[in-house]
Structure formats: structure tokens, C-alpha cells
Length: 230
Image (spheres, rainbow, N blue to C red):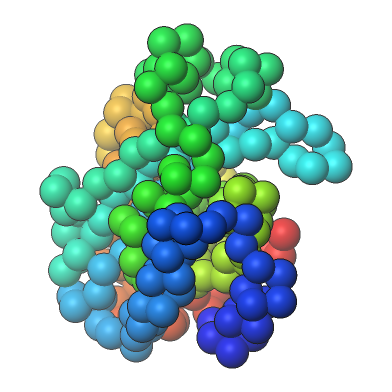
């Protein structure tokens, strides 16, 4: 990440939040980057899954919910989890697939998009992000950051949809469900973004083990296989 470039964009474009929210954003931006050369056993990763709704072809669908789980010391950390639902107008909320947290009464307890995204940044800190089909997830998160906070979100992503076929070329799997079945993992846990983040984290542990055997021992080597540009 180019800190000078991001700081320049931030100063020239300006955030869409002020006061205490802007102070939170500034604090996150000032945090040091997590060294991508850290070995997996010393690094923290955040596995993320999102849900979207509404929107249109030009602007894209709106981010409705985020689920995330931390992986530290090559283990899923159940004390390091995050989930939020963003409050949207009914047309957006009800356009999202129904799951606990996005529709009906859950939207009444949702948070406004800007505070919700700041909560996510506070949770994330500067850990690399992990997703299955990271190109899609990245576009959704970047678009919401720009729309609600007014700043570009450039962050390292690890794409399991790219790494798994590279590490297991004979598996013949193309979907997350197929990969979970291939490794006998808990596909039944899929319910919502937090549940999806958990099962994706299980796939990430498989990737870390196989990548380490192949000589890819840190995040820098995993992010070298980048998702397609949004």
C-alpha cells in the first residue's frame, strides 16, 4: 500500500464524515501496516464474507452485512470475530437474501453505514483480508468505503478462489461448496456472512498448510496471486 498516495487522496478528496467519526478514520489510517513478510504462525488474518442488496448495474449493489473471523497463529480465533448489519432503506434491505440480521426486525437494530464501516476498520486494524472470490468481495467493500466514508480503501487481499486451484490442481473444484466438500469441511454452517466467514476460514487453514509446504510462508507470497481487478 502506498501511504503517501492514500494520504494525498484523503486530504484532497476529504472524508464524508466529521467530528468523532473522522477522528476514528484518521486513527485507523495512521496505524502501521502489518508486515506481509511475517510468517503465518506470527501473522493475523481476517477472513471476510459480505451480503449485498439493491443497487443497480452502474452503481453496483449496496453492502448490507459483513461477517469476519480472525485467524492468528494459524488457528481460527473464536474470540476474534466481527458481524454487522448496515441500515438501508427497505428496498435495499429486502433485496438481500433473507438471513438472520438483514431483513425485518434485524434492520431495526442495524447501524448506519458510516459507523458500521468504521466499526469494521477498528476490528480489522491492518491485517490482510482473506476471501473466496476476493475480487468480488473487494469491489463491494471498496465501493461502500468510498460511498460512506469518502476515502479509497486499498488493502492486501488473499483470494482462496485463486490459491486453491494452484495448490490442488487435480481437485477439479470451482465453487466454495465444492472445495468444502473436497476437504470434508462444515458446509452446513452456511447461514449468513458470519457463518460463511467461518467456513471460509477453514478453507484458509487448508491453504496455509499447503502453501507452507510449497514454500509460500507469508502473506506477501499469498497476495502475489491477486484477484482480478475490479
